[in-house]
Amino acid sequence: MTKQIDLDLGNLDKVFPENFTQEQVAKAKTLLLKKLAAETHKFYGGKIQTVPKAPVLGFNWFNVWYTPGVSKISTSIRDNNDVSYELSNRGNLVAVVSDSTRVLGDGDCTPPGGLGVMEGKAFLMKYLGGVDAIALCVDSKDENGNNDPERIIQFVKMAQHSFGAINLEDISQPNCYKVLDTLREECIIPVWHDDAQGTACVTLAGLINALKLADKKMEDVTITMLGAGASNTTIARLLIADGADPEKIILFDTKGALHSDREDLKADPRFYRKWELCESTNPKKVLDFGEAMKNVDVLIALSKPGPDVIKPEWISSMGDKSIVFACANPVPEIYPYAAKEAGAFIVATGRGDFPNQVNNSLGFPGILKGALMVRAKKITDDMAITAAHSLANFAEKRGITPDDIISTMDETDVFIEEAADVAMQAIKDGVARVPISREEAHNIAKNDISYARSMTHELVDKGFIKAPPQELLQKVLAEVIKEV
Image 1 (cartoon, helix red, strand yellow):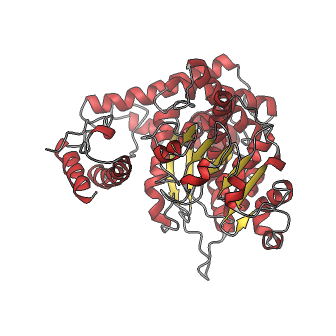
Image 2 (cartoon, rainbow, N blue to C red):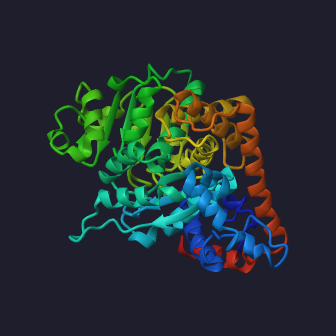
């Protein structure tokens, strides 16, 4: 008899047959979540809608919200563009921009193929950070069919006047480096690349606490990194900025280890971020990944979906109290149970159905909220590092264990604290247009996040947002059990 799925999806480990192995349960959960996503997205027609924030109390209010009254809003903003933050929703609105050329582990999904992820970012931004967001998937191909970073750059520069910040997402390398670095300098609002900076911020937070539990220091540990895309190269950069020794870091891309003899990267100016790491890391020029895993303290993998990308014997060869971050999505490079069996002390993944979810969803809602509250001109690396320490400190204060190194998305207060800390760092870095106190920042973030969550729950309670039918959930579960 098929067990019943709870509507809150809180019992996923217990809905499968008792004779399922750990590997079967892990595979079944992945398949279940994918099938549920397909069915529920179809049921709801996506997951984001637009609702008014002002009332209609009588017929003439249409003339206030639109014409003729709204003319005064247009001319006021014309005369002082900064009041657009006060007279429109711009000050709390983020554009989630992507050309969908590297969507999770699925590669180029065509521009509209990224809508599911970008709507997901908007969903999380609202519920977790009290920030409104809209998905904008654009075509970056030129007349020859090549993805041109200049097309994304020009699109964002033209659209920036409608938003308080830009969240870049799922842009393939090497284009992602140029897009971010150009827009950070040339836009008048903050531009954030969540695959890079967001993942780096939350990975740093998780590693800070993992090292505390392992009784190791950032400056002393050796780190091997599998994957050298936007995420891992930015992780390496932030780790080094926060005290890691670059000479104790080794990165691997699809062609091998990064080191100063990689002429292919030196000769290609598009990969300047990777070449910077070639010059500063792996001075001994270790070439073999298995060799780089021997006695290493930390493995950070953001490469390709597993579960057999990382071999258990590599984990077994690591040093005492080894730390493994296997964060490929949707399936980690090695399942947590397998890494633990191979001897890992702490294992983290990018998924919330395993312990220690190191996922950028813990970062971008609070970081962008903090930047928006002070109308920041940009998001500095120091703001990202501050966010990482804010996340780590919050978790440490409430208690951390090897299976609980970082906060989770259902801890509301973590986003409030993170937003306030980021706002204060923006002021310190001189990129804030509106200085406020930490207490003010804390209260604004708390009120906006509470409003967003309360509104969502109220819509569910009143039936405007309906729960998915139980029979739909059971149908999917039965299909998964049959397939596995």
